[in-house]
Image: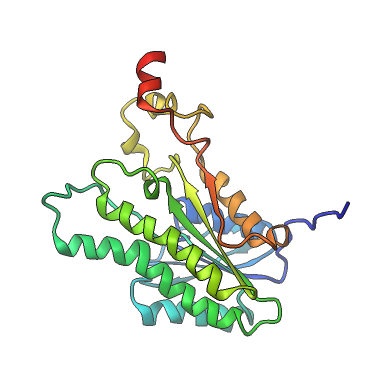
Length: 257
């Protein structure tokens, strides 16, 4: 039996979009802990950057919806570290909106952030990775909304469904040098999402989850490290569900709780 290599990213270069808060912050810190050099981006300079021990992520103010800015982000990673091994397309999100009255501009902005921007950043990353002897890996952070939309998320759900299919399409085109995979995230307990789960701190919501708890950002970070590592060298075009088994069907909840 072949021993699997450890999740060691020493000497590797990683870019995490939206890596200054929430899930992205923990993803970036986890890659730092594994030895990687990490560049994060956001639209404004944060008070605190991801760190591990005496090592801190670098930061570039970037609007990933702007193709030129997205390309410049990748260029900076290569300039800083000499290469690019991993891209985590994490930037995204959307407030709830009524599909009957939402403006076309709102829809365009949500599609741009959650679908077009990951495509643009991935294109720039792929151009670098294809020239490296050992290629690279891209991880797209998706959402259970792509599979199971909720009221108020029409534009977001459509964009995330597009991101999932985009992942599978790019996996066909960019292999074998570049592997690209997708993570379907479920309900995740972050500071910014706390208000979504109700005044009880999410206690009622957790009853709908087989695992009995919401995910925390480190659950997603662990999946990112795996998909970016040599342990996943034959994983390409996959959709890794990190949602604790999904949610119980409404008919089950109605009769058991």
